Length: 190
Image 1 (tube, rainbow, N blue to C red):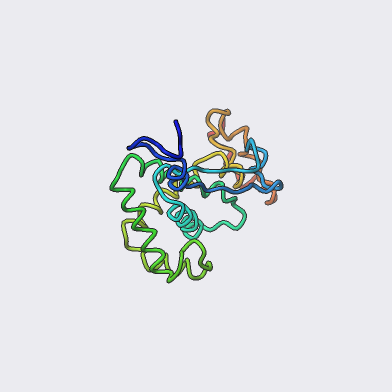
Image 2: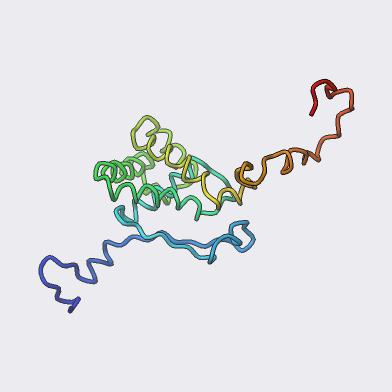
């Protein structure tokens, strides 16, 4: 097929590239995530949302849940989840696109390129909107319920499959002195 002159109804290479949006970045070598990731570079191809929408969502997630040392790759999971959901739900896609406009308007500039203070003020202006609620609720699971976040925050995961906490961390309290024996009950112990 000649991409310069596609048959009617087919995308040209130029149209395809124009409609493709990609978020990308790198993971610092010193990051705890560098050991988990197959590569230090990452990219996320958006299925439904535009580059501007993706950039705004990424910046919005970082504004709502700021962690100075959490790599952008983890925040990109929020964008990935929302973009995937928007691909299946046209109403959500419309909500997310409208949210980018709301953020840009509230910021008085492109939200993704605004200063952190301007981003925070813009987020506060749209706090009561369905867009804010949707992104906020998605952030909670997308940011914190994944292996990269676990590694970053030092969470070892569920204890149950590894035998429970009695032998895995229950007695790891090293920053306080041991209590005196009189502080423990003697009746009914195993």
